[in-house]
Length: 626
Image 1 (cartoon, rainbow, N blue to C red):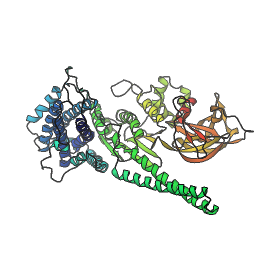
Image 2 (cartoon, rainbow, N blue to C red; image 1 turned 45 degrees about the vertical axis):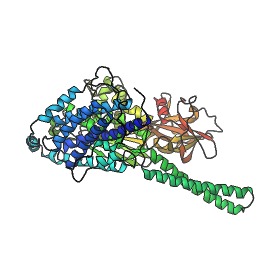
Image 3 (cartoon, helix red, strand yellow; image 1 turned 120 degrees about the horizontal axis):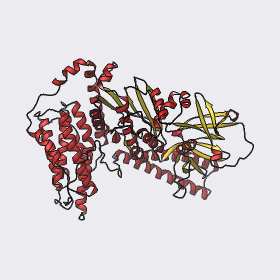
Image 4 (tube, rainbow, N blue to C red; image 1 turned 30 degrees about the vertical axis):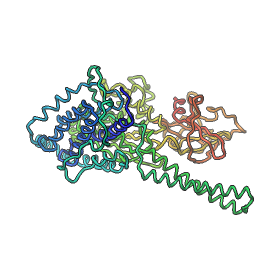
């Protein structure tokens, strides 16, 4: 690819930023339009998005992208003018064209522009430009509504609920940057029939460049459809200017406190201060420094925070595609998509959520016929929700399907040799649910493209463990299931529980701590060489940190000790310690490459007295119990 000068690169970066933002929202808008085809504002927003992409790509000379976007725009224009009516078949073609546009933009972003096979998609768009308008498909659904009157009352609220928060989120996230024009174009207008502004006006006027889009002689490559594909660049974060202003204010406060500290030190060195006055002033300074530092830390963390909508926005398209493949009717409801968490966590939760949604669609929700026979509505409900709870974010995937049949799960586990008949008879409901996370476990008799290989829930378990998170399952047979993920807000600074083991201090991430108990060591039992404690309705495996880290005893062993009950993914265990020191917020420091792979240690932190405390890794500890 020929070198690009600074001016051309600025144009290209602006195009990619604007186009990516438009495409991120497009899938969700198109799926919403299929449910509410009479939403004029939504239709106009979709049309403007494609129109802007077409105009900007034409300005930069991306001919292949212009060709596809232009035909897609023409079809959307006919829908906007009511010359066509939205149907599932028309929406399939538009979504296929959108996937092709995403692929072409991805090529441009990678700097590898090549000829793609686009004629097949365009051939599907062309008949829609000459098709005679047909009445809205509502008429054909009337007999179905009569057969199941409950269905008509359910989908509309879900549709409006799904679209409205996202519109608010887009507006709220807008910042006065060079690409603010994107948000202005994406907002619904009061006059839908007004002419849309040319897309090229969003770009600075400059010489057209052909160096950005060189032609390759490689043979055309087929289009690979990837519904819900994410084009966003994770190397940058868009920050609200108000957050930058707040950060600057806190830095100013920190400078003032620093100057005050320097002055107090000078007075102390020159013996110009009374001892009592010094103690009082230094106490005030400590409190102010603590307050300003906490505020500064919070502002920096907020700058790393992004809405969980970044992950959630791909699911309406995925659910639509899966429901058509499975022949099921599903109403996806998304709640709390404006909930924010650290970008490092957002990047890791995508795969687990996809597997959990696939599991709910394939295993949980029944077919329309099965639901009617069970006295339910034809349309199943799938709720994806996110909410803050203390220093954690709770994400739940809930369905009103058939629930988990514990007897069937147990029989399958026995058939696969994962457990014995005796083990199954002694298991409680929660332990049976945990079998779903075993590698290779699946209740499907036949492997399909969607499930049956026994890797989905294993992936969920692995990724949640990586984040020091917890997963919980709630299910009632024939009523539904709920999978609850408890994740830390950030992986950089954590709330921790400091514990003492024979004089040594260790830090345990508070997000993994379920409870602490003081027990008599004479109540410990030894089963198969493993120390355990009977705690209410479970048998809790125990790990003595003194043995793990080879800490020498300082005196006679006391009968009473403390057990910190921790959880990693679906597993529970107890860490035996000498004393509980207290709760403290700590910054995680790396031990470096040489000490990076020590089992049971996630990193280190520096205590107030300058000592280094190791941070326990509950994930590695749980694996040592297996």
